[in-house]
Amino acid sequence: MPAKAPVMPVPPPGVTVGRVDALAGLFSREAPLVLDLGCGNGLFLAGLAACEPGWNVLGIEKKEYRVRQARRRAGDLGNARVLHGEVLEVLSSLPPASVSRVYLLFSDPWPKRRHAVRRLVQEEFVALLHSRLEAGGTFFFATDAEEYLAWTQEKLSVNGWRIKGWAVPATWPMTEFEQRFASAGLNIWRLQASR
Ligand SMILES: C[S@@+](CC[C@H](N)C(=O)[O-])C[C@H]1O[C@@H](n2cnc3c(N)ncnc32)[C@H](O)[C@@H]1O
Image (tube, rainbow, N blue to C red; front, side, top):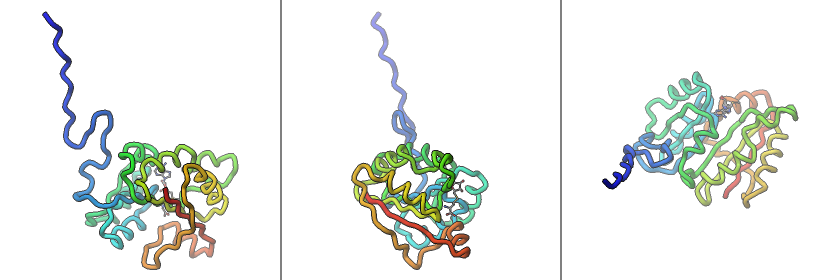
């Protein structure tokens, strides 16, 4: 008797073979996807989603209590969502060239030289960012640590990123950490990098 051909499982809707689509069912409409990496308590995320109703704004946060705070803030906004998870894992699970803007705001700067390997911005992160941003998509970075800005610029010196300064629209919300740094009179360093 000839051997039976193996039966291939049919993936459920929203799941592609070999990859779970992290976006499946998250937003109720197609719109430019904007990420807030390490969104903390969601102050910026919710404010941005309210200022830019044409965008789908997705926060990614690893601390559960911060996720709860951010989800409460995002409330009824149909264009704001928060995923609980690690930035690198969630970024990896997104389809290539699917993101139009990525915000990394006041990411932990790990100022001691020997701790710099713990910074989120590393070669692996930059390569992933490049692959997930669509052509012409932009990465926005802000920090209170001038050394972290220089580090990030250096990591972005591959793949032809076009780097320039970033003037935040006056109508946009501040992040929680930005409010703290601004009220302490600290300098804030920003860049944007387009692919
Ligand atoms: C210094 S806080 C800044 C929060 C917010 N962006 C702001 O400006 O107010 C950094 C946040 O990033 C989160 N975070 C750090 N590394 C992360 C990672 N690998 N994946 C997800 N969240 C991360 C932390 O839990 C924290 O909430």
